[in-house]
Structure formats: structure tokens, C-alpha cells
Length: 418
Image (cartoon, rainbow, N blue to C red):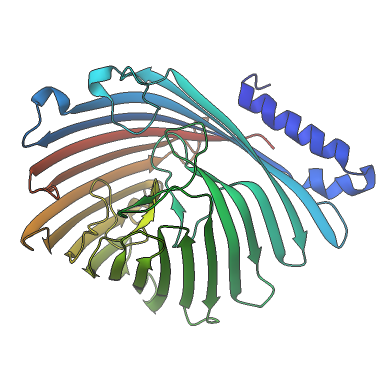
């Protein structure tokens, strides 16, 4: 039996919800419940060199352990079904020091030291009518206008309300408001802020709306997405995704994206982002080519801590999304299942950006490589090991040279509990 505080929190929340539901309605609520414990062991090493900085400020090296306990109930019987989800988060420092912080895994105190641990518990109450579900509480939405990051030991979470509806065949509609944000390295919640926005304010209002339609068996999905971060920006995103089967084991994937972002309140935002990614797959091999174009007076805006919905949003550089920046990407993936080694995958990519900065002659590039293996059987089944390596070379907005080399080693395992 789990003894951690987050495990007890999930159990108490579930018990409380069960007591509040009439016994005749509890059957589906409990029968369809699911729970799991995900464990992430994360080692982060980065060498950050920038002209004008002392060498002792360049090192970032930390090691931490994350625990993510997820509970998802079924719904009570009746026209309106009620349920409860919950997430418990615990992050534990394994190794760090004031001269090696900066991994983004744990909170950093006023003395420059990372906290020994952090924990949080978030319940989510839900109601379902027909094919529509309302969730209120802790949320991890995944939409082009708001993509919570999940690239460290714990995921970013929000508080708010979210309606997801699938009443019309092939059409998915999402509506909602987010009011608070908890970063991946923080246990508490704060008002929302924006990245790449000057003159903006912290706010408790981010409204979003999304409609995604799958065009039958054509392999085509189109979507329109709207996001409004009060006193910061308004954003419209259109996405076209198409997969063309060519023959058995052979396909061409097209991903086209357009975003228009404008100011709200006294903020300064004016950005148009166009992106295209084409991926050809053949017998385990995937070859991708991408292009991204920023126009307007400012960089691409997005909620602080989230990932940006851009084809060139990669491992180290913040999205290759400076004002007027043009960037391209070449990517190669291989799934070793094609040669009889299921669970082993490889990815490498190169991104080059140019034509940005005060004089319009800024340049930057990034090279990333991922190797991952998930054990397929035996007592360690589903244990995952991933090594991520990245190198970045470029300039800051002030023109200073930057050189970054990173290595990340992640060992993960998910244990089903229900």
C-alpha cells in the first residue's frame, strides 16, 4: 500500500466523492476507475557559455526524482453522470548545488539553493451529458493555444474549467477558461503571464475555444483555435494535418500551421507565424523537412511555461520565433521495430534560423538527438530509458554569442494501480 502524502490525498478524495454519491449510482463510478503511478528519474547536464558571463555561471547539473499519481473515476449512472479525477505530484532532489542550478526541475530559493522536495495535489470534478464533458479544477489541456510542458520530472498544470464536446460525428469542440498556472518546477499556483510579450500583465483569465474536424477516411483533419490571455494577447491558429497512404508501410504526412497574434490591453504584440512540416515514412524510416516564417513587429507569444505550437519548437532554443525570423528543419527518425527490435527508437534533427535581431542579420542553429528504449517484456516491462543530447549556437537579442550543450538522461516507469 502506498504511504506517500499524495497517495493518501488521492485515496481521501476518492473516498469523499464515493460517500457523496448514492450507493446505487456508485457502480460505474468505481467500476470504470483507473489509477497509475508514474516515476521519472531525471539527470540534467548543461554547459551554457555566453560572451560577457563568468565561466563559473555556465554550469547547470542536477538530478531529481518525480512521482506522478493519477486517478480517473468513471461516471455515475443517469442522464448526467458525475465523477472525480485527481493528480498527486511529488518531486525530490537527488543532487544539486547553488552553482549548478538551472535545470528547471525544482524550485530555487532566495539563497540560490533548490528545495529538497515539492509536492502538490489537484482534484478535478467532472460531469458528463451525452458526449459532452465538463471538468472543473486541476487541468492539463492539450490544445494549440495552450500546451502544458511535460519535459521535466513533473508536468505543468492549470486550474480552471474545460468543456469537451463530441456531439457531432468527427467534430471535436473545446471551450474553457484557465485562471491559474503551476509551472513544472513549482508546487503553488499563480496568475498567468506571457512569454514574448512586453507591457503585459499577470492575469487570471485565459479563454480558449477550439474546433477540430476529421474529414471521414480522407486522412485530413482541420482545426481552428482561439486563445485570449487578458491584458496580453489574442491569438487565432489554423491547422491542417493530412496523412496520405502511398503503399503498405509508406506514407506522406503534411502539417500546415498559421497563427495570427495581436495585442490586448497595453501589451505590444504583432505576430504572424507560418509553419509547414512534411514527413515521408518508409518501413521504420521517417524523413522530415520543415519551414517556419515569423512576420510582424514582435515574436510569437504564448503562456509562460507552456510549449509553443510551432513546427520548429525544439529542445533548447525558444521556438526559433523571434520577430522576422525564418527557420528550416531537417529531421530523421527510425523505429527499430522494423528490424526486429521493438521499443527502440532514434531521432535526430537540425534547425537553422536567420534574418532576426536588431540589424536583421542574426543567425542560430540547434542540433538534437534522442535515443529511447522501452523494455517490452519480463519483470521490467514498460521501463523506459531515454538519452537526449542537444547543441545550440546563436546570439541573444543584445547580440551576445551563446553556446549551449545539453545532455538529459530519463528513466521512467508507470505502475498501474487500478
